[in-house]
Length: 130
Image (cartoon, rainbow, N blue to C red; front, top):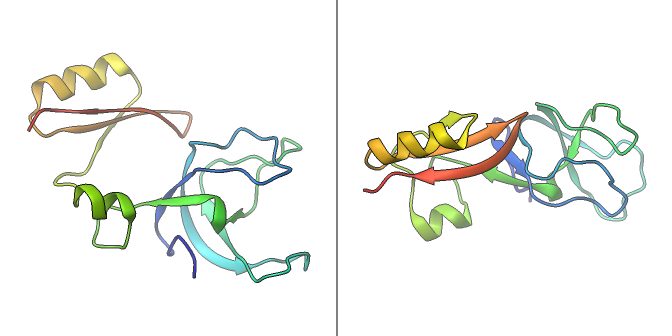
């Protein structure tokens, strides 16, 4: 069973043992699942082709990513522990690049959910009072 399904936005929430890259917190969209091509896994694992920017330890762009390092970000009825705890979001989050802009939007828009994203990395979140 995998964490993600095709089409999910997903955040990199952990790194693999030998990964020295800086992908933690980056958000990607998974597009197509694939099996481990190198035959070095003891147990079957799911890997994803994706849209977005992830880098390998050697600095090259990653071609696929291990499902085990991903946390899906869903605004639908998918099974997700955050949604189970706090409920389904009422609105699609607004994405901006500055904390100042996010704070202004959250302050002036009741119920707003504002994400600050820079270089495909989630930096912070702001919430307007309901």
